[in-house]
Amino acid sequence: MKRISQYFFRGLIAFLPIALTVYVLILFVTWIEGLAMALIRPIVGEFYLPGLGIALGAMLILALGVLVSLPISSRLLSWVELPFTNLPVVKSIYSSLKNFADYFAPHEHDAQQVVLLKMPGHELGIIGLVTRQSMKGLPRGLGALDDQVAVYLPMGYMIGGYTVFVPRSWTVPVDMSVEEAMRMALIAFMASGKPPKT
Image (tube, rainbow, N blue to C red; front, side, top):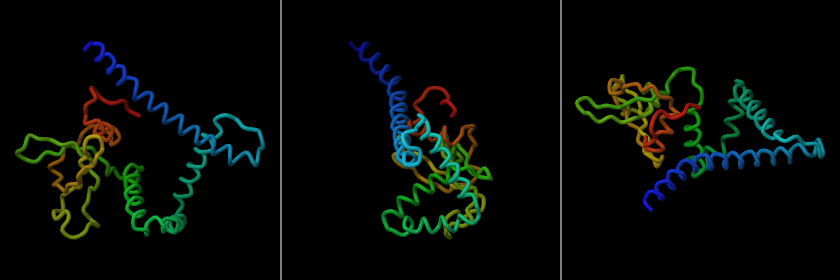
């Protein structure tokens, strides 16, 4: 009986990630297709090709990226963001999500780095993400030393984390992308071997 339950849970663990990923993708594609059908139907009538929603969504996101990259659009974007940055509860949620998204956006300088944080004289090491390479722009009292970095320490299953300001010499670079580190932190580094690259 014990062996049967082991096989069952191994099968479940193998099946669940694939099933949930496929389910989320189906929900997303169905929503995009429905939205595209609602937008295009008044123009083209009954004519519709499967997959048109995905193509339309990709083109809209690409057009938005080009528009946001224009110098003049930054002022327009700040006006659009006004309600989201001034309402008390909405401001906290929007700012947190925007900062999180900005962290994973492409940067010209390589500020994003996975490191092993080790205090001198201690064997304990903690995986973290360097979020600031410089303390410039922070309030007085934070990052008192010039050669300090801000390191975010994610907790397992993404229930939170801590940001610590430490000397740069306490960090050891790790050959791992930010996405891999976040994915491994999500499951408390329980996966065997190196996670697949995306």
